[in-house]
Image (cartoon, rainbow, N blue to C red; front, side, top):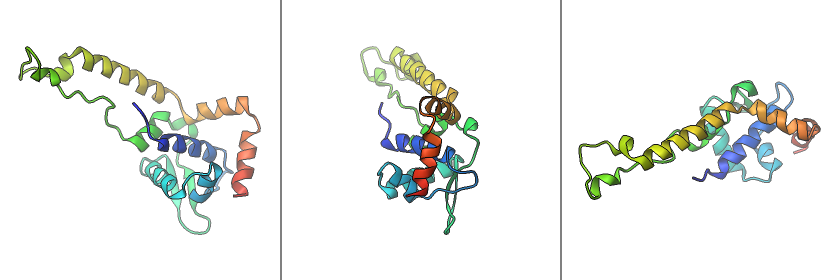
Length: 159
């Protein structure tokens, strides 16, 4: 499975917003310029985060994006789902129905060993993402790079 680059962009943008000055909105152009990303494409990701209730947005001269919730209340899975959607990564097509001994009356999504294994793996992956929050990432970054919050605020202010 491969996630789109929008997931990476969204997670980094959310972290940068977590370090923004309280009450300050950050424009999509500033967030895009931070990592030299295309503004129009990043803006689509940011709008998806707004629709998911992760960010808020406002228009006008003081407009931009802010976190809608405390970073402790934003799971990584929330961001991934906002960008990639909630559909399962593996979708059993029940090909066993057409194979030798296949039966039309069997639900192979439940009976197939391959389908079951893939479902278990996906559940584990989703649990791991649900267990980690934006605040967890923030703490990890700050413990390794303590100047990151201040450097982020300064860079955003100068963009």
